[in-house]
Image (cartoon, rainbow, N blue to C red; front, side, top):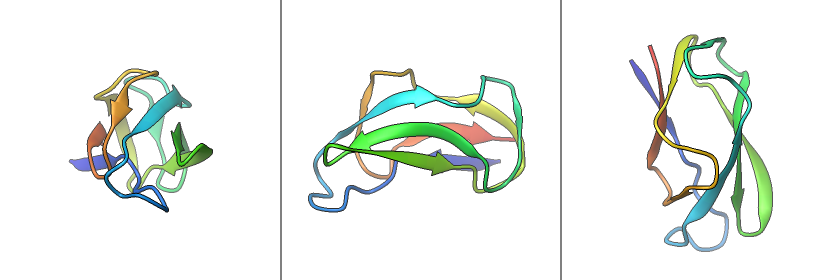
Length: 76
């Protein structure tokens, strides 16, 4: 199982960001390198890529705040 982590903001690593939206459904099959979510950090929208291939299980909801490194999903 591989964790999907919330990315580190570029300016202030302690500043939480927002999970803007999921690009892959819960339970969807994803490939490594595929965009699975969009987040907003430092006022900039960024894409989170799957770091492995498998089934995505979301661990957070759109609109939630997360700190850098927090687990927002799992790939099984």
